Image 1 (cartoon, rainbow, N blue to C red):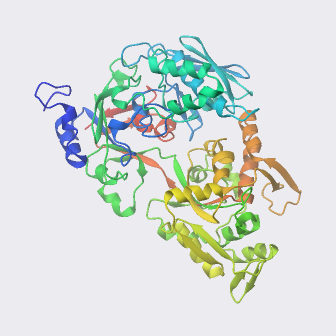
Image 2 (cartoon, one colour; image 1 turned 135 degrees about the vertical axis):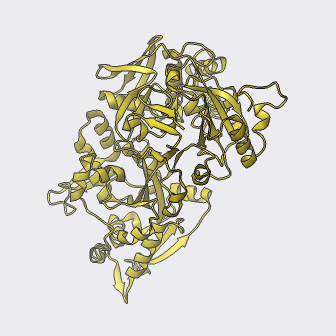
Image 3 (cartoon, rainbow, N blue to C red; image 1 turned 180 degrees about the vertical axis):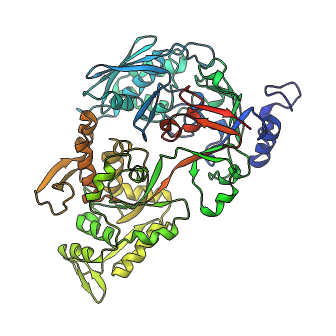
Length: 603
């Protein structure tokens, strides 16, 4: 077997990597550290059917051909590890943080981190990245709007201290969460900007000094340039770039990383395949781990390694029915009426989904509330108690559905429903023809007397029509990675509003749990309610937001799917806090970075 860095035999590792998707991967595994080697942890690339490694870059502001997730989240480190599932912050480059006052967060960087060229990593490296982000946001903001919801400015007090100035008083954890999150692109996954790098420093200076007439072209350049390419990237994480081929990227341990001594293996590789499902390569022993797509269907489980183990078990995705609520759109949809949305959700019979889960999905057997199914299942948050009083749809309650439709002027004649205008009541469902819960709903509604029209459109048309509000119903899949994460300001009042078109000013019946509103109603602004929850940390805001979701129903949860990753425990051992192993997207990368968690070869 050749040495890992050998170039003297006439065939470089880069040549070996270009044999093709299957042959190349097998050859690399055989020659450079396969399943019997302690040398390499091999991971399936979840962006495998996308951009080739040779075209990927580590520019967090450019969303195309990105390598800032894979492999950037491996080769670059971040200030802290924030676990949305556990609402917990773990130290990484930043070893300490505190609120110097109600609106000032100070973070202290370790002096043990260096870039892969040996230069010291300093506070200004991260400050540059945040200042570039804020400059872009400031240019894009409407007059009078905050560029960022909470972060006003940032500066380096010295080489190890970052001062982050906030608009509003925040609790320490909420403050850290907001300043270290993805803001524009993938910048939350690491510190990508080296303050004395000529290109980054030039862009940084231009963003600080450009006038409005120059900003368009400058931002256009920054968000389209592929700098640096992955093969040229100088990172600061536990692994550095060794070779980049067409179907595999190989990284070698950076011996000067603070956690290097805790790793008993020397290489980490990321492998590409023709499709983005890792099950077969993982079952065949071609890779040691995968970031997601687990658990697997029941009929595949016996193919998995004996030591098959999961990570990210507290992360999940929700499968939902999404409605066009009709606010500020010209499309005529029956779902502009909340009672019609409620009626459809009452007709749905979630019990019929049980036989279709196949060991992957789980039934969302709670009232709609925008809380992760995993959290409700384990009862780890008070929300699991609150929802017991909420309206639970999905019970095939045709009597209640009839009452709601009749309140809106719909009529039932010879087993068929008609609109207040006397037209046959027909619902258009855009896409989702192969999704099990959509099929169950269609059957339920047809039996109830509502006509269905299933329409399949291509991805571009689907995206265009949902944003224009030109549909009645559609399926939606939404990450459910933590109680707070599900109510981020750029998610509900921004993204979900942009595809479901709900009115941000809403009246909810009171008290909470009483849909008849015996105490009247309460008017809330969804965005302001979320912001007030973040600022005050008062769970009453959260409870009222859940009740708003339950009574307004822009979407209804039908199923949820644990969004776990996997690794072969026959040869590898991962250990650490639940918040890292089971509560963070990049768990397989993060366990190599911090002494809070460990990864060891044991085969």
